[in-house]
Image (tube, rainbow, N blue to C red; front, top):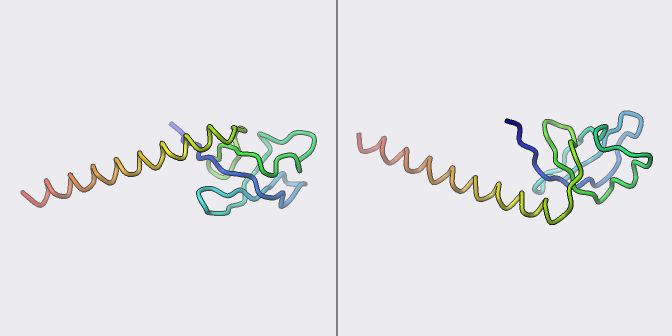
Length: 93
């Protein structure tokens, strides 16, 4: 299973190579936008996309991006709780 994380395209960094800067949860990273590139690359600036392994895979709307980010935060909290439970069980052995 692959997981795409919502990121907002903030700038086109290399139009020839179809590269753009995306902000993912406060972290800026260069991504390839070939999968979502239309006729005007500048139209991507400000758009939300699902980012996976350095590629913007598909465009999503802001509401979907916010819901996905919230779900990912909740999953992170759930995983942290499970890790703490596992550590406490191990400590009792």
